Length: 304
Ligand SMILES: [Zn+2]
Image 1 (cartoon, protein in one colour):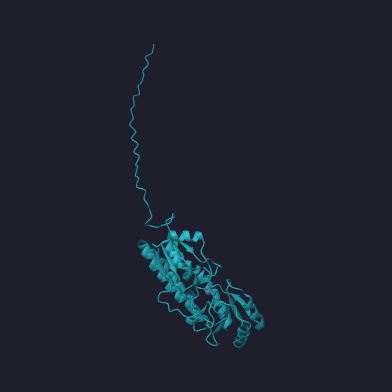
Image 2 (cartoon, helix red, strand yellow; image 1 turned 45 degrees about the vertical axis):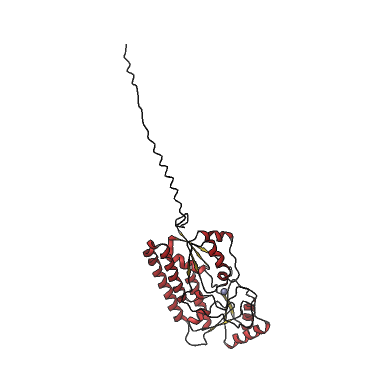
């Protein structure tokens, strides 16, 4: 006979499951940060996106309103872009009476009244559009001013500093990070400015021809004369074309710069007449410094 020992496992376990019902559903509406934790920044044109990304680095998410290849003179935003606007914390406007902003900025701000609006043109003296002003344009949002301030690298430096000022208002904790990003980028822009001055020949009539007059601030900065084929957003007349061909011959123009957003035909017609070549310069390219450098290389050749 064996005695069986029965173990009565009277284990009364009190498992205290503490359900922390922290019904504190942190409504993060005030921070405005996106799901990935980045700050939403909206800009009007692609070159500004380079400026914002160079300073903001991994802290920012950039939305460009007028995408590459579209014209800021005519573009309308998509519903998707308006959603990005609603989630953004800052809008960096060009501010130079660029047609897109004249037509849309009020409606954009109405989508998100909490956004910080940064004016990238502050302190920049705006100049009139190239070409005559004899005729009135049909477009309601036409300005007499030349909006293309960013094509001057010195203006680009001003724009970069305004964007930095905006970013540190929104995210003051990242001031050192933003500054560490901005300084080398400004150095690069200063190098670009110096290289432009070095590459433009002193002799010659310092004159170049473009289709769309987007390089007025560049011409002003470097003491050059820009001849534009387009006048007030319009194709030249037959008489205007004849006059342009004459001027191009008088000044021995060998290169005509055109923009991808516009019709190339009249530029090509003039180029054929005078034996010049057509070179594309996109004033709205997102890779700002790279784009300006390749333009300046072509311009230096054209001015020789
Ligand atoms: Zn333009």
